[in-house]
Length: 442
Ligand code: IFM
Image 1 (cartoon, rainbow, N blue to C red):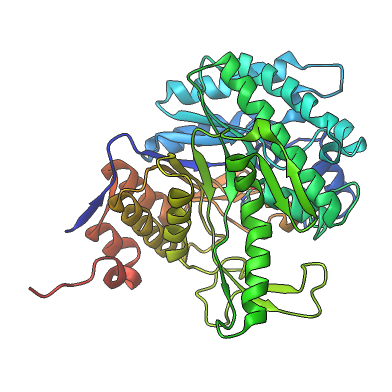
Image 2: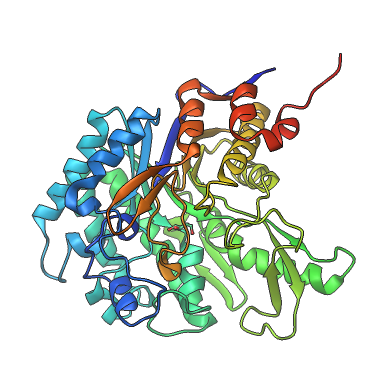
């Protein structure tokens, strides 16, 4: 076989998020975090989408074969103050969604992607249950405005990372800290997700609603070590299972006890999978904050530019397999996958190998319906600032110039073919050709 084809109607896209691409986003908690010197750089003009450059980036996306795009709405723009809605901002997002549809791009909207309005942050945001009702109001406003163009919704992006990075590790803005706060935040995010799910369906019964889970497969550093195995299991369930279990059972199980949220049960029409890598876990007495589990990549890994990611494509298959076994028949969208790689030295093989695994999963019968590469163009990487470059297109921040990396053309060929061929891999990632298309002697 020289081409691995995907099913008809497969979504081929890229993903972005408001604060990372819009620029001049000055009314949320991340802006303040940046001003307080907690990030490597400032987001500044980012990719200038708020200034209108989303149009040229969408032109690029469509010209290079993409048929879908996942982007997020900035709550602080829609509701700049607790008692004020900004209709002009809503209109701008309507124009964006319409612009995608007019270009033949299916828009997928994320309602919450890490940022909170500053006024909400000052009230300690998701630490408080009252935020759920506020989120519901905001969601209602957005869905009423965009329903003409959008019917694919992600309520919350990576609730596990939001709560762990803010309230445990301290990399993201957070009012108070500690495991108990992180658990409370996660529970409120689940309540928020459930409220959003129900309100979206009330307004738009045909909508497809899910959330994006950052799923990390994990292996014990030494499989013979009971402590490493124990730590692996504790970390695995803390990072990966709390939110999904809350959705399947209506109960969140945490090391601090159970929290019942019955209205969350069954609130997903698809599962959004953000997959990047696999963690190795070792018992480590110095890691009290992480409950004595150290997560790392083995030294001989195929590392990305800043060693943020180890290229472990099999993990994508395992993640899909886990979802399909946990929620039989639930459609799966790969809502993020990518690598930081300014030189585009690893991205082509990362792309080839991960799409090969996605194809294996589809071929096995798992219901994978789309793939959104992170990201379309280099964008602001949170506490890591501009030190990491995830774009198919590079960005020169000062001039706003886009730089066409070879991966643009590789991904374009895949999207246009609705599959990945031997010739493409031979051209763009010859170093993994034999792994993906082994030479079989008859
Ligand atoms: O940039 C982030 C995104 O906002 C959430 N998922 C991981 C990406 C890469 O770090």
